[in-house]
Image (cartoon, rainbow, N blue to C red; front, top):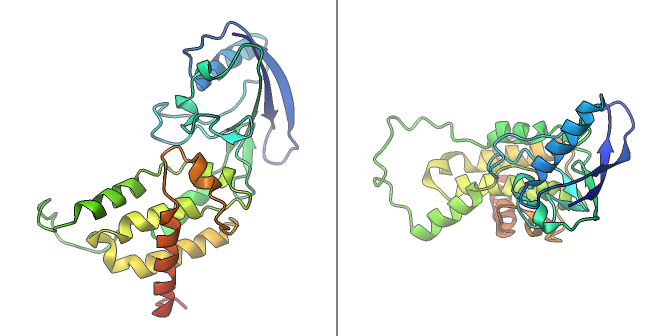
Amino acid sequence: MNLNLHIWRQKNKDTKGKMVSYQVNDINEEMSFLEMLDVLNEDLLRKGDDPVAFDHDCREGICGACSMVINGRPHGPTRTTTCQLHMRFFNSGDNVYIEPWRAGSFPVLKDLTVDRSAFDRIIQAGGFVSVNTGSAPDANEIPIGKEIADEAFNSATCIGCGACVAACKNASASLFVSAKISQLAMLPQGAAERKRRAESMIAQMDAEGFGACTNTGACAAECPKSIDLANIAQMNREFIGAKLTSELV
């Protein structure tokens, strides 16, 4: 198949970017979207041009690095990570528009690569368990109901890709933050720090400049791991409960 690509090119964070058009030919429909970009970059290198910069790592839908907006949708049309999007979902002759994440808190570093370190700082603010519990207990020593364990696991499947932010008209990170708060709040291991965790992580989210959640649901609709909106309600309950007996000034 042959495709007309329109890709955001930006030299660095201090320069203005623009859409640049390219054509790729003889693309196999079984290729992944990233493999198609690899073909484009090989062609650009042969011509002596600068290849398109984009993030990737595992290429197995695990790491969340392959962040790009494809035809107006984070990760493209199939609600999966970009590396798991295959070219069979496109038709020969299609115009494909490829952009970086659209959010002020994810500044563009180059082309399709953005700085997502804001997520790292949110996790550093409280997305962990630091209480000394001694040696590791037996796996069955602390009984946890299956329903609670399943919900905690579902929240923990968030890969921190940022698609929720890119999909939200407010560039809110509430789905990501709520998933990280919920997965620990629902388990006894995270109970000791749950109040401080909710306050600290939400405060850091605000400090990073992410927008407020207005419950449009675009985040959950585009999430490649199907993180549920119910996590945001859980986060709000955790935050309100923490504020009633706040330890932070």
